[in-house]
Image (cartoon, rainbow, N blue to C red; front, side, top):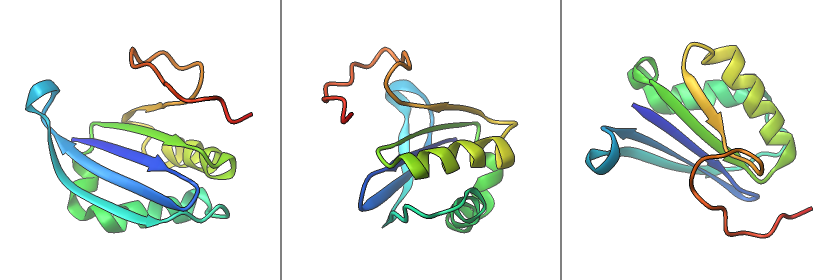
Length: 106
Protein backbone atom coordinates (compact mmCIF):
# COMPACT_ATOMS: atom_id res chain seq x y z
CA UNK A 1 0.00 0.00 0.00
CA UNK A 2 1.07 3.55 -0.72
CA UNK A 3 0.58 6.31 1.83
CA UNK A 4 0.33 9.77 0.24
CA UNK A 5 0.63 12.89 2.41
CA UNK A 6 -0.08 16.40 1.05
CA UNK A 7 0.52 19.13 3.64
CA UNK A 8 -0.82 22.56 2.69
CA UNK A 9 -1.07 25.78 4.68
CA UNK A 10 -4.49 25.11 6.25
CA UNK A 11 -5.18 21.42 5.69
CA UNK A 12 -3.36 18.14 5.24
CA UNK A 13 -4.77 15.44 2.98
CA UNK A 14 -3.74 11.83 3.55
CA UNK A 15 -4.60 9.01 1.17
CA UNK A 16 -4.06 5.27 1.31
CA UNK A 17 -3.77 3.49 -2.05
CA UNK A 18 -3.55 -0.13 -3.09
CA UNK A 19 -2.44 -1.57 -6.43
CA UNK A 20 -0.14 -0.02 -9.02
CA UNK A 21 -0.43 2.02 -12.19
CA UNK A 22 -3.83 1.87 -13.87
CA UNK A 23 -4.96 -0.63 -11.24
CA UNK A 24 -4.35 1.60 -8.23
CA UNK A 25 -7.31 2.39 -6.01
CA UNK A 26 -7.85 4.92 -3.24
CA UNK A 27 -8.87 2.89 -0.20
CA UNK A 28 -9.28 5.66 2.36
CA UNK A 29 -8.58 9.36 2.68
CA UNK A 30 -8.62 11.96 5.41
CA UNK A 31 -8.47 15.76 5.60
CA UNK A 32 -7.06 17.19 8.81
CA UNK A 33 -6.01 20.62 10.06
CA UNK A 34 -2.38 21.54 9.41
CA UNK A 35 -0.52 22.49 12.58
CA UNK A 36 2.71 24.35 11.74
CA UNK A 37 4.04 23.44 15.22
CA UNK A 38 3.46 19.68 14.95
CA UNK A 39 6.37 17.46 15.99
CA UNK A 40 7.54 14.32 14.21
CA UNK A 41 6.21 12.21 17.08
CA UNK A 42 2.78 13.88 17.04
CA UNK A 43 2.56 13.48 13.26
CA UNK A 44 3.42 9.77 13.51
CA UNK A 45 0.87 9.19 16.30
CA UNK A 46 -1.84 10.92 14.29
CA UNK A 47 -1.07 8.89 11.15
CA UNK A 48 -0.90 5.58 13.01
CA UNK A 49 -4.23 6.41 14.65
CA UNK A 50 -5.84 7.05 11.27
CA UNK A 51 -4.28 4.02 9.59
CA UNK A 52 -4.89 1.50 12.36
CA UNK A 53 -3.80 -2.01 11.34
CA UNK A 54 -3.11 -0.76 7.79
CA UNK A 55 -0.01 1.06 9.12
CA UNK A 56 1.87 -2.24 9.03
CA UNK A 57 0.90 -2.82 5.38
CA UNK A 58 2.53 0.38 4.04
CA UNK A 59 5.14 -0.41 1.36
CA UNK A 60 5.77 3.14 0.14
CA UNK A 61 5.22 6.73 1.20
CA UNK A 62 5.15 9.90 -0.86
CA UNK A 63 4.87 13.25 0.85
CA UNK A 64 5.01 16.95 0.12
CA UNK A 65 4.55 20.08 2.17
CA UNK A 66 4.25 23.79 1.51
CA UNK A 67 4.89 24.45 5.22
CA UNK A 68 8.67 24.42 5.94
CA UNK A 69 8.34 23.58 9.65
CA UNK A 70 6.07 20.62 8.89
CA UNK A 71 8.35 19.45 6.07
CA UNK A 72 11.27 19.26 8.50
CA UNK A 73 9.25 17.28 11.05
CA UNK A 74 7.79 15.03 8.34
CA UNK A 75 11.29 14.08 7.17
CA UNK A 76 12.24 13.26 10.77
CA UNK A 77 9.07 11.20 11.20
CA UNK A 78 9.73 9.17 8.03
CA UNK A 79 13.23 8.25 9.19
CA UNK A 80 12.24 7.60 12.81
CA UNK A 81 9.03 5.62 12.27
CA UNK A 82 9.06 4.34 8.69
CA UNK A 83 12.76 3.93 7.89
CA UNK A 84 12.08 0.41 6.57
CA UNK A 85 9.63 1.79 3.96
CA UNK A 86 10.70 3.40 0.69
CA UNK A 87 9.69 7.05 0.85
CA UNK A 88 9.98 10.08 -1.42
CA UNK A 89 9.53 13.68 -0.32
CA UNK A 90 8.44 15.64 -3.39
CA UNK A 91 9.93 19.12 -3.52
CA UNK A 92 11.72 21.34 -6.04
CA UNK A 93 14.75 19.53 -7.40
CA UNK A 94 13.36 16.02 -6.89
CA UNK A 95 13.02 14.26 -10.24
CA UNK A 96 9.69 12.43 -10.32
CA UNK A 97 8.96 12.50 -14.03
CA UNK A 98 5.91 14.65 -13.27
CA UNK A 99 6.28 18.35 -14.08
CA UNK A 100 5.50 20.74 -11.22
CA UNK A 101 3.66 23.56 -12.96
CA UNK A 102 3.71 26.02 -10.07
CA UNK A 103 5.82 29.03 -9.25
CA UNK A 104 8.51 28.63 -6.61
CA UNK A 105 7.15 30.46 -3.52
CA UNK A 106 10.60 31.80 -2.54
